[in-house]
Length: 218
Image (cartoon, rainbow, N blue to C red; front, side, top):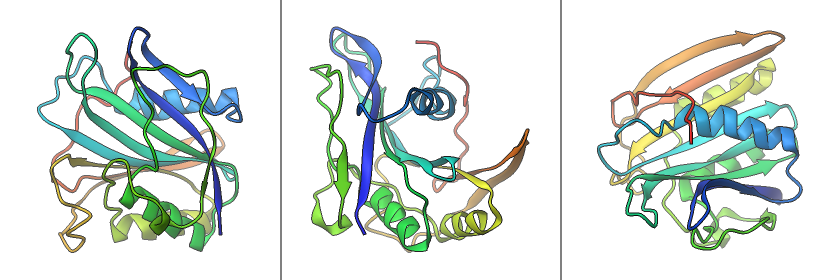
């Protein structure tokens, strides 16, 4: 089944600086949630990174609003600053069930459909239709979604618990070509915030915790 996806991209654009560009269909509250719960949470501009890095994430905002995508930090800006973050996000406005979950996970493993030109800031992005994961050539490598993470996603859906998944890996890891590599479950934290229950699951396949999950000031 086709997945209609709105796009959100946060990165540093030439002559503009850090900014967010989205499809026109993305509501303001979803844009704010993306910045607060994904960008500011998983990127600290004051933290010195030691190498190329990428991650995949899946955030269930409401039962019918999902954000999923990738973070890459191997970009450079026009003043030669390295490790510039590049957040690519897809916004899905339909409930997920088992088949769609597997399709989203397959997309996260394969990688993004396309990239935004950082040298040319655009006011909006065209929505995408994800038909078959095998029908496109990924613009960047994806991130392996461990079996444990998939099982937790299905379990959360059955229990009505909102999903918050973040999986980081080193950029040079061959996680897609070597799916049998052992993945260590580093952390499973259950959060109960007011009326909404959230599971925040971090799977670190390179067996190290990434520090500095603080709000970035840019």
